[in-house]
Image 1 (cartoon, rainbow, N blue to C red):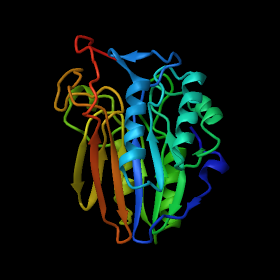
Image 2 (cartoon, rainbow, N blue to C red):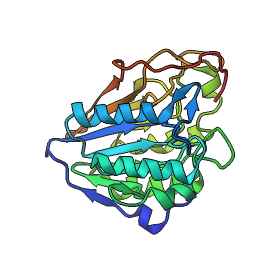
Image 3 (cartoon, one colour):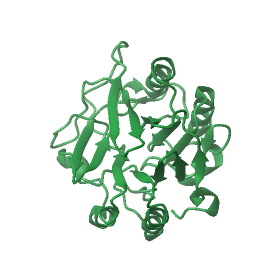
Length: 280
């Protein structure tokens, strides 16, 4: 999907502190039009709200919230209207990307008001955040179109004085789960080759895999985060849900280029998951 001029223009934010940019990543909420909608037996609105309430209550206020795809399960207008309203209530600038369950055009229509922005290029403090659309209509795997790779190259070339965090939905490196790695980013070699040309890239962040992952390669942090609903078991050959609780990631982007992050899980609430279901 090509970025419009409005999406591509830098969105400038002032960080709350000069020495660090604070981010929250909420991913893979899989919201349904039906408020009672369930994924593998779990009510996704209930788990999403539990995650967001924890973010608001217990964290230092984030400078921005990144919603990294599969926000809706059924790509319905009702799901995106609900998400827009809830993000607005959190009073944190929110930026999003599409996942394989999403409809980017419907997202453009409903996730574009109040605190929620279409922008895919954020300038904040000593950092830039670049959000890429890896979704492919009708497919589970991801791929970055030439327009997305060109957008990435342009933003990195034009802002070499900024530390950079690149965000997408599909994993660009293997996470060790055979079934998930078969539906990751198809042109990951092209993406990683481009990233390697720019030393200011300090981190790559994604969702999709419904599990925690963090690996440093040649000084770059490669990071995946839990879902706000059902989790997938790490290291699994075939589809397998995990018993870990819903979660989110909190990140500190320091002015010297360091990235610190931690995953928090909502383990004080019991969520019911049907582990007999073998797919989603």
